[in-house]
Amino acid sequence: MQCVLGQNSCFPIMRLSVFKSAWKTHSRRKSGLTAIRTRVRDIMAAFLLWLKTMMRSCKQGFEAVSSSTMTRIAFTIAATIFFSSAAFATQSVMVAWNAASDPGIAGYALYYGTTNGSYSTRVDVGTNTSVVVSGLVASQTNYFAVAAYNVVNLEGTASPALTYIVPGRLNMSAGANLSFPVAPGHWYAVQATTNLVSWTNIWQTSMESSNIWVSYQDAQAGTYPHRFYRLVLH
Image 1 (cartoon, rainbow, N blue to C red):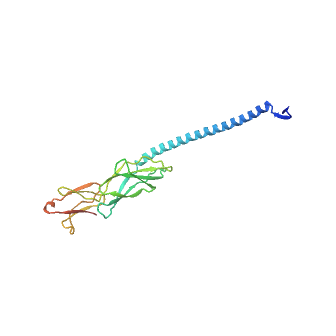
Image 2: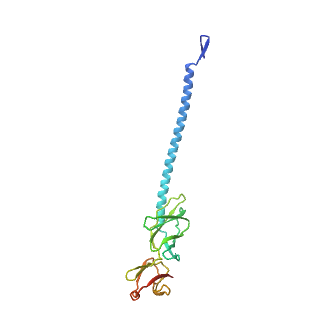
Image 3: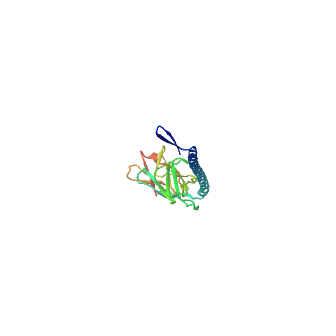
């Protein structure tokens, strides 16, 4: 250091070389931190790009496998139909399918609604291969589809929709034309009365094998001043 005297005071002055040395050290430290930050940012960007690529590949691969697997699942509505006792009340149905053989499948999701391909309800059933769906309105047509998902909840393509007409309602139009939907594994009896006390079987179906609408016309209706009808499930 140098000391300049003036007016009884001494002012220390650092040599220029000391300033230069300190500045170089500071610059090197700053450059080092910047390089570290840049390196960390580059590593994170590369990792995120790799992760997105792997997730995209995983999803595409699972969808391809799941799509081909779902076409091999036998998707059926069980013959057992659960009816409530009240007229025009909601009904329930059991939906079942065969388990897929793909070891990557972790569970299933059931979709259903009244519009084919646009389902209003999704039910995650886990590893179960059957489920009872309740709250169905009699005479409405419902569509059901099932999709598989893997351990990271990536879902494959849903199966083709299966149609189900909910039984439980008897419709009547002019001329005593009666119509109603039927369920497989059951037969139905149409009964009539004039006093709502004594009921008589006037027609019955055979054991049904399909879920369809059937119809019957009461040719004797014109011989009565009034006649009432009901449908009995067997």
